[in-house]
Image (cartoon, rainbow, N blue to C red):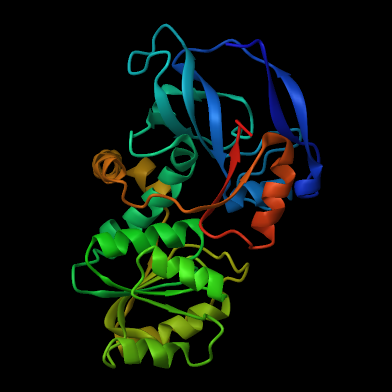
Length: 330
């Protein structure tokens, strides 16, 4: 291991422009910790929000963003038994991923499946566990059912498209331009629609023989949520995944009553913390899916560590299709 490494440091809560690459001194490992030579870091919307101080976890500057990484184990503390130096791993924490080195608890990493590259591994788990928890644990999506996936060109949305197809559902998904809609179709969606179309709900009804979809997967929120409720079937399930639009919708309770649908909120990470058995079962299932290459991330942009600020700007400008990665080899 090297005694020093480079990291992208957020120096003020003013957004991506506050990121600067600095030389850092490696700290000794504590009990249960693993040092990783980071090969790739996946960007997530919370990384961007943290540089503005707008995320629920609000570190004070200076700090290093980066929730997901993949790389090679370079050092382990004496009490670590599950990993060895040279192991390919992926992992995550509340930050510190935009760096050439990362130190994580043994419990926060997992083996990187052979089916995934370092870049894919740095993007895989967060989106995959959200999609899995939503479609499997919460909606219990069945083969032959239909699903409307909003924001499907995003990392979580695209993971949901791929998992829904793997589970045998008919997938209707939304993307805001032709390029995004084409990518969604390539990811496996049966139909891709424009979320701005005022006839969105009517078109979904046509595609489902007038019934509406059994499940709505919504990481977007805002006005689009109201359109989506009009496309849901009797007794359907509406998954509240997030609010990427920045606006939290107010759902009409009378509409849910009349159509008999359920509004289901989900937080994959919190559910795992509160239910260890669920977490163990999910990890087993996800391991199998990863080994099969299911939900393999679509990476539209790759940046060097020096260009981490530009990577966040691309995310902020909503130009990403699937995921954006900081590649330490560039």
